Length: 445
Ligand code: ATP
Ligand code: MG
Image 1 (cartoon, rainbow, N blue to C red):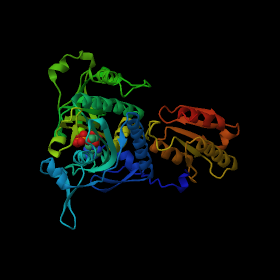
Image 2: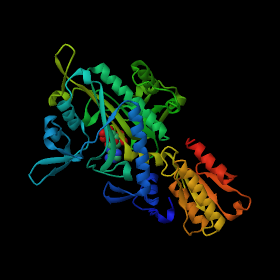
Image 3: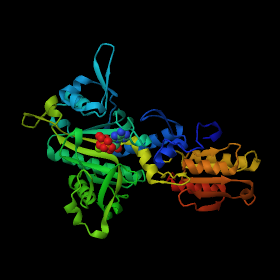
Image 4: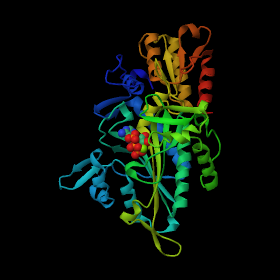
């Protein structure tokens, strides 16, 4: 992508309304524009990151055997009357009336609708287990939308719903989700710690939240520091192996890690003092097992092998897709701007031409861009007629993890510079070697 033809409305000034780094940087880097309190347009750079996160979420859900669907944002109120949540949900629910005086709502979550789909089409234990999920916009009329996309009113969520014949099978679905979420967050460059949580208006017994440690997080967290070192890494997971999946969950939930809602001071005291940490965290996901809370009132039953009908056991599992954009920036930025992890970066590499119009520099840049694009790595090429310093500042602000800098001085000895945004480390390489390195880093061999 040539920057001269792109739409990247970066701001020079620091927006006064933004209180935390991720909000400031998303506005400054031209990723989003606020249209109303807690409601945002996603501009091209922001949209690229959002789409990358969605892609990672989809891939990890597919790996776990979960099936994508797409439900509407608007829902009939009658479905929510069946579960009695239409009245319970309160002011966070945006209620709408259509021209025929029918009550609708903009979905804050989808348990009722998915239960309706299930009861219409599934009737036997033979069709189980089943997990359906979507990535769809939600609306919650938050009393205090703030911190940009972190606490929006309209926000993008991955919400998955599990259907199983009994509690034991449903808990396997719960564990499968925990592991698939751990993988997802790791691929996004994040350490997200599962913490036992309160179930709130979704209801249920078993629930964990996933928290990314950050000083600007809204939740107070108490944890054993050793939990931050746990990694799934590249280990193979067989999602059908109940015992194996449960072992992974045990590994990640045995050390103390709680939010203020579930904190147990006595149990915390048992953690060795040197490992005891109190901090703040951003909730980037939550998993729930809630049994028959919706299937019973809504009549979602399945036939068992002996012919009787039982309400299906359900769980619901959410990832805050749009909040993750902010959370990743909170976890990865410096005073010059964003530092994208390779797994979500909007472009893998920036190409900076320090002397636009110089024949050798122009043609070397073009060659590098073509070679990268041929390997499936589309660079952002700053071909504007700007000073080198301004180009570097833009690249630093938007946070591409790698930069190839091309100028007449280096080209005199046949070299360009490959530099790393995170470490600042720079190396002079031939254009071919620089491309090969980037290809290697992104594993596009
Ligand atoms: P919170 O406690 O932060 O209000 P929640 O527990 O009500 O969130 P869930 O119902 O668990 O939210 O939704 C699943 C995920 O959706 C959350 O873990 C969070 O990452 C994301 N999310 C929830 N509310 C918002 C919001 N207002 N803006 C952006 N993301 C949100
Ligand atoms: Mg939650």
